[in-house]
Image (cartoon, rainbow, N blue to C red; front, top):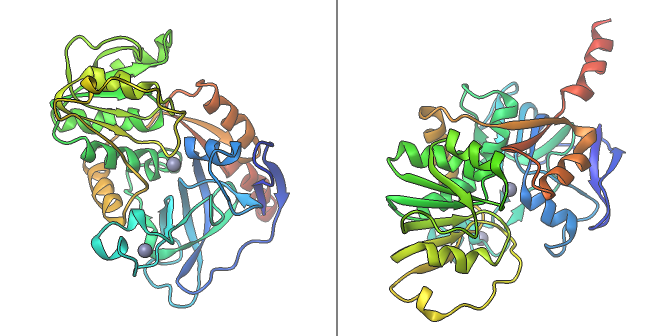
Length: 340
Ligand SMILES: [Zn+2]
Ligand SMILES: [Zn+2]
């Protein structure tokens, strides 16, 4: 099978022919249809996150069809379309797992970081961490739900019942969160890179009542803000934008250093917190929401072999919505061959 492999952080992914993996006990083998490109993939690829399992197949927004099952794997049938998220395995016995916080498991294995992910034609996954995909979403649209949607949802819950919600960095996650927040009756204020008028227009189309540059003040104070962009300077900016009692959630896995700031912008019981990973419960709740609230998922499809281009576009802020690798390009010649 074709896979795009990270051999060394800081260097481009290499196309490689690898054997199709075999599903172990409790695992399913998936034929991958689509895999989203998440900002976390950039952090792994750039070496911002330590000790990836090299050589590594990136990708943790995987949509595929079950084509084989290992021993003890009974949850899904061959032919089922399922999704594989970032949380690939947890120990089940540490103090975090035992207290409903498996997202913080001390031995957690993450897809496309500590185990191989979905920048490939096939992948294996522990069936207990996979999700059924609501039928209303095409493969390409479903892929970003697996992380951008899911972590976005966990961040939205962490931000509380804020009537006025700010979103910093209007990409894959924020464009989904904005829609869920609007459905919950929240007012949305979007912040983009300065001069990104296309991003601001995109945010308004998805229900933001105001969109501006991240160094601008919103027209009125916010009750909460979620920071999706990996930019530490946004932390004091967001603290200044929220009213007292407000919450600022950092949703990314990595951020540039946060500049020091005066205590008065935290004072007044403002809360600053991060959101890390996901629990299976988050995923189940989110997919129930996604099944009932049809989300418009903006994607930029690219064939698997062009994964590096997708990473570069995400790095430069050129992607509108979510970049998604599709495997149909590689599959087509083979099935055409099979048909002939
Ligand atoms: Zn654990
Ligand atoms: Zn992700």
